[in-house]
Amino acid sequence: MKRRQFVLLLSLTGLLGIGGCSWWKSPDMRSQSPEEMVKDPEERSNKLVGDITQAYGKDWMRVEAVGLVNGLHDTGSDPSPGPARQALWEEMKKRGVENPNAVLTSGKVSLVFVEGYLRPGLQKGDRFDVQIRVPDQSDTTSLRGGFLLDTLLTDQEVIGKQLHHGNLWGNCKGPVLVDPAENEKADRVAQCRGRVLGSGVATQSRKLGLVLTDGHRSVMTSSRVAIAVNKRFHSFNKGVKELVANAERNDFIALKIHPRYKNNLDRYFLVVRRIAISETQQVRMNRIVDLETEVLNPESAEESAIQLEAVGTDGEKALCKALESKNTEVRFYAAEALAYLDRREAAEPLGQIARDEPAFRVRALGALSVMTDFIAEEKLRDLLSSPSAETRYGAFRALWTMNENAPLVKGEVLNGEFHYHALKVDGPPMVHVTRNRIPEVVLFGADQRLATPLAINAGNQIMVTSAGGDEISVAKYTVKDGDEKRVVSARLDDVIHAVAELGGTYPDVVQVLQEAKTANALASRLAVDALPEPFRTYDRVADKGDDADKDDDADKGDKENGRASVRREHPSPDLFCEEGGAAKKTRRDAASTSDEAAEDDAKDKDEEDSAEASGDQKGFFARLLGR
Image 1 (cartoon, helix red, strand yellow):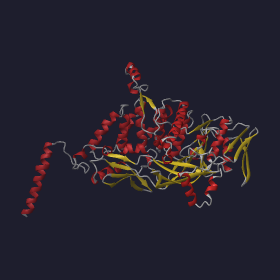
Image 2 (image 1 turned 90 degrees about the horizontal axis):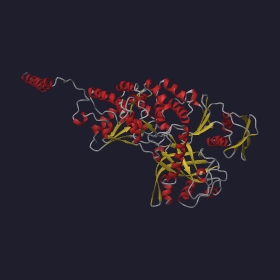
Image 3 (image 1 turned 135 degrees about the horizontal axis):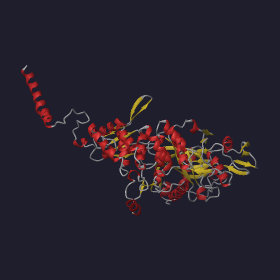
Image 4 (image 1 turned 90 degrees about the vertical axis):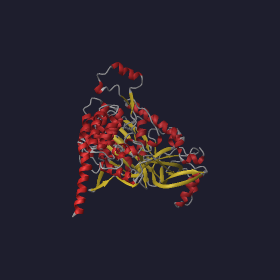
């Protein structure tokens, strides 16, 4: 009994002496949550995930191979002796080709270098583009109409003039698309390069995660970061809650992509790295109050909006308040963050900004695409009739990403190979084709017609002809299967379906459109990859917004000193990026708001890519051959 009394007295002394001393000295004293009861003082200093981690897996990976294109119309060649020919010859023998030399000298085939870029976060089974080109010393004159045979893609390295294969990352095959921006009589270099869209299939997944920086690597810290991320992000798979972060090691946290950010990995990392590792509710609310002020300042609006997005639901009120700003920049950053939080208030300002402000168009369309509210879909539908090619195609791609089975954008798959959409929308008639990501033809205006008479080709076996009037003949001529013919109206929709019915591939349909445009048989605008441009310059001075009453002389001084323009450095959402675009390091200003200037920028980009392809971007083949 005495012992129990002693223990009870000791406990009471501790409560009154230690806890009681703290109580009367600190009138703010309150009970602590488990998050607040941390031993390391640094963990109580409101650190964000990005303060102690770096993103892992954000780079693009290049995979390569030697391949063979067949089906050429006597435009192929026998490859020159060398390591590339030997590698192809050995691969043909492995696949059971009895006489590889006879095949290579037939003129119907060409050796090509195959190259693909695996995007960050690529999962097993995902598709990607491959680019092909003939060797510099090849006698091949054109790849048009060719078909790339099954090719295995690996990461490669050349050591001591010996080719070393790495891991198998994918395989590819399919019809070759020669750049539709080039005509049939273009120079040989353009005719001997092409793409096989969406033909690459990944055989393994790429890993994403966060790497703890020096001085912060421990099992406890890794676990705490994962807990913080999982508190903000999770998803459901068939009703089962799935966490996105897993502390695999003391220095690495593996990340799964949250579904809302599947097409914007860069933003996902930006938001994840703004999550607070450990902060009390009071500290959190104080930080939100500060961010509510900072998000109204154009200079700090972007960073503040991303931090409020990282906070989650508690940050929505401050972002909604920022939507009331007269400043376009402030309104955009707030609306973008609210879109990823799926708040319907974001739809109206994002739709208006996508239409009127080119500098933010690409990100505004990307943000609208992640929303589930019908108002966002309505705003995108309105943009389909815009006179701007990049705005209306960007809106189409955003709608397709939002719901690919929606009746307006579902379309059909012709020949099991390429997507085709005939949209009944207002606005000037336009035909859009792609040369990256997915083989796709989109008609903006379903009743477009071809002018007659005409005589154009669809690949090496199909001809589209008309002597005049409203009838067009689509005929296929082959020695093996005989001749086939379709007679259709001059409606472009009917012609495209007839070409597909006769076995025409996506490159064949693109060639029809290309030759029809050259022959003035297609009056509609023919646009190629009219994607909204990232990295445009925004004129902050022109948009005075809440600062409209400032001294005009000061604004004039800013313009003269070059401080008027603000470059938007965050890249565009993945659904508007070219495959491998991040790896090519092309960075351009696109300050103009006109479609014509955007087309000029696209042309400049092609020239830059062409120059790079002849230099360091050639890959291991150039290194192998010493070029």
